[in-house]
Length: 406
Length: 230
Ligand SMILES: Nc1ncnc2c1ncn2[C@@H]1O[C@H](COP(=O)(O)OP(=O)(O)O)[C@@H](O)[C@H]1O
Ligand SMILES: [Mg+2]
Image (cartoon, rainbow over all chains, first blue to last red):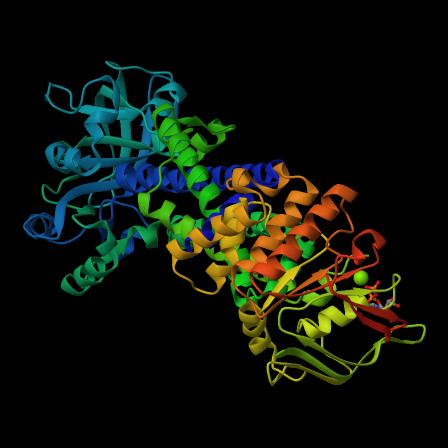
């Protein structure tokens, strides 16, 4: 066995150029595959963070009518009690009650449609981290004579306004009557999503509830759960607990993201399997060439009594060693590459377009260590498969023919 | 003298695309223990085919090869591998050695295939390399050896596992005269000292007269079988 490994190892280095070429091909193939997989994973993760964590949360509860008609009158009965019950649950990190409705925002001579969100400032900060998103001015903390409002950077640009200016909101109260209210722009937030920046404005729930004429109205409860993987079970539990409401998890709210994340794990390994299959064909070709060149020598080995099974395993061994060697080198280099890129970040070309859709334009690729081991296993499996044909060719040699000198 | 190899009406017909070729034609011979025999004849006379048949590398079309009372002509392939490994030493015209192994490793390799103990086989390998005059080339790879030296390593390997007999197919074909004589001297000496049965084929007039028995093949049939006392 030891000698077999020794012979295999030395055989690999017999034709140095050829072996180096195939090793470099495998290394580059792996690096490319790993890079692709890591970037894809990073993109999905980024999208998840950008969309779910700062915008949607894991689960949302609404009045069933509210989804089609986002008006103040479609609120959840006993919404505040429900929210405080939810906040006592072990599986829920935080549940943020909001009063939400559509309205119109106007400055001196410009206006725009907006979605007004009345929030509990403290709870909301734990839910979406709104305070951290403020790039100008401050969070909704002090209550002055005129109530405060926080708006997105894009809306500020669109309405040509700034921190400290006035903004008038027009909307329907709890009875459906149209009313106006004046606010002072306290802060401006920024998010990767431009549509979000342009549409969502935040005010204190206490203030806005008073204006619409129902101190306790809650039209939306956004929930962050402790174990993000449990979103389905928690959502269905909540739906059962509050049958008069409509409970939706982030998968219902963002179906395309949901499905792309769903197939992601599988997709990643498939990217690599395709890359590995490609390099395996290269490997097959290399081994086959070396077998054909060594026909005489292999014939001699068969003649002196080396069994076909031993010759077969010698060739499989050569392939295994070459693939393990290049696999380890390739993955070490991939690991180094990913670590560096994870620090520096990778700007995505056309990132502005992504930012329009709500996604970040710089990615930080990373991969779990287990993934690298998976790749080595897949690589070696395919390499061994690729060696079967050349090895089979080798053992089909007839010693009497192979040793004949013509 | 004990008979080691016996052929009975041995015939090999190759079905080539043109016409069937009778490469070995009805050969009945006996080889005794300790013989040093040359199979001679012009190119195409069937020397290689004959050696392949008695070496169990090829199957006869008709007739039998009996080695120490065992008929190998109909032996199953897997059994033949073991049989060759245990009983027959081979020396070919070239490509005898594994290029990635040193002289000692090459000689040991055959004993390794026989599952011999490591220390014993290394000792034997060194001993055999000394016998063929290569004690200074023990750790050298074949590419660093001359053609004659490579053939001597092959002889050392063929004898290392103490086979019943050694077959050498044109061992001197690629060698210059001096190396050819040198190789034959070594083979002759080992034949005597170790009492190893040795059969080699050649059409090389220079080395034929080293043999103590000369069998001449013409068109696959034995035309002469002479013994010499030397
Ligand atoms: N595989 C084969 N198929 C057809 N004819 C063959 C084959 N091998 C050898 N021969 C023929 O058999 C004859 C004997 O060949 P060989 O044993 O190689 O002779 P030698 O070794 O004396 O030169 C030759 O005519 C050769 O052409
Ligand atoms: Mg020949």
